Image 1: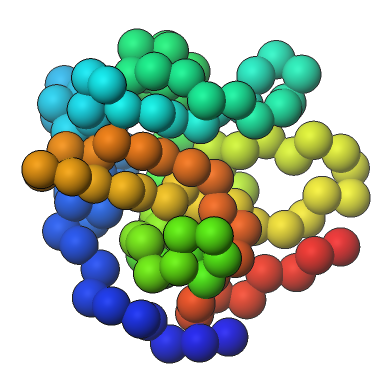
Image 2: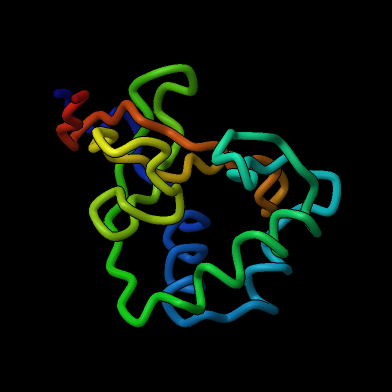
Length: 133
C-alpha cells in the first residue's frame, strides 16, 4: 500500500458528491458527450459504452442506494495516480460476478478540459487495501 501520488482533482470529489445527492443533471453535465465509460452488462461482464448508455445503467442503480458513502483514492495499476471513487467500501456500483468475489472496486475518473472523458472500474489502489479472494 502506498500513499497518494498526486493531489486528487476536484472533479472526482464533485462527481462523487453529485452521486450522493442523486443529481442526474449535474452528473450528465460533468460527462463528456464523446467519453468512454465502463458498465457491467446483464451477464455481469465489463463493457465500454458512451455517455447515454452509461447514464441508463448507472442512474437506476444509484437511486436505489439509500446511503452512498464514499472515499477517494488513486489508481495504483494501469492508470497510476488517476483519482478513484470508492463507494460503499468498494461494493457499488459493480455487482459481484460470483459468490467468492469479495474484492473492492472503484470508479477511476479521467478528465480533460473540465469534463470526465473516461470512467473505468479500478481494483488496485494506493491507500486502500484490497483482498483478492
